[in-house]
Length: 388
Image (cartoon, rainbow, N blue to C red; front, side, top):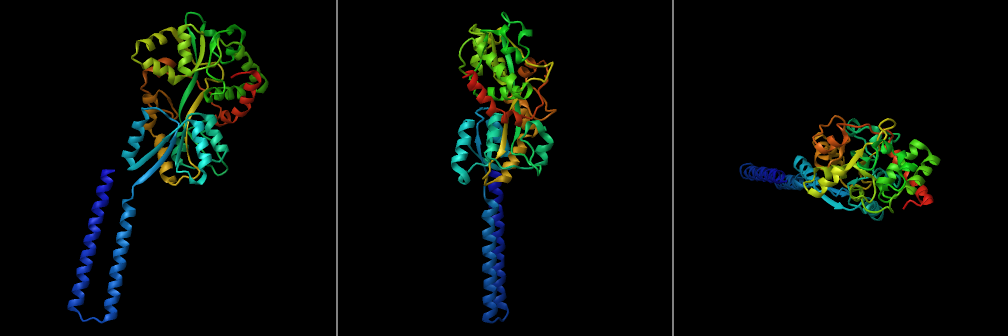
């Protein structure tokens, strides 16, 4: 911003010099050349108009560019991401932090008066909900279409636009006690609902967005009847009532409270990269499985972004989304926040992700927009089977 301010200041100085020279020329003309009152008045009007035009244009050139972001990403490492964008573009970022549900509620309440330009959410179901309620502005960007695979963005509209794009992914993996559980008994999601895992499972609330997305994926693969039966089986296999977050489930396996859990991959990567002895002890006791490698692949959820419906700075908003698809931003997601890049062929230099996955894994390829849409039917199933 300092460079931008200096440029604007220099431009104003040049303009004032031009005005001063123009004034000297007019005065010289009046002194040395006979002139009647009408011509003199005309010259004054020309001078006044030139002065007004030049001065009026200066603030517009010097005006600071801004971008207002409503974000559900609460990761300290993202500060570097925002700072780099501002350095690259001169666009100042104003940010409001809240959870996904809070952001959508705020957009509904604010309507056309909303200041939001960009919306960042961390779940496919919430991105789908925002699109369904008309809270996003469909955009078309050759950069985004080239970088982000079709299954990781909103469904294409008739005009080729999409309402949102995924910029990073997180795998929904199975964690197990290496001393009590045979890995082959938990290498598919379906086995979580089988009798052999009775009394073993810890999991967070079934209605949490991370689980809604997994269950929405299962609905697509298994169909309604089999998915509901599977959910009932998972409930029957719980070691305790659902509670806590994903890290709590991993710790519960390590402590012996249960022997199988479900977690997003980046929570495990955090524990693996931690210097705390207690975190290292947890990871020594548990194993990690990327489920369904022999069938449809492991479920991945996304963190993504959209342009707000009533964005006041839509050009800056699209520029920011395109920045999130750049190699530098994608490397940040992977190496700074332990997420998988959404853009193919991005260099992965995260030892935890590499160790966890053995260098790579097969992920499912169904459109994440379908997973989000299925969350409505899934929630009804959860209510019927008593999955809290």
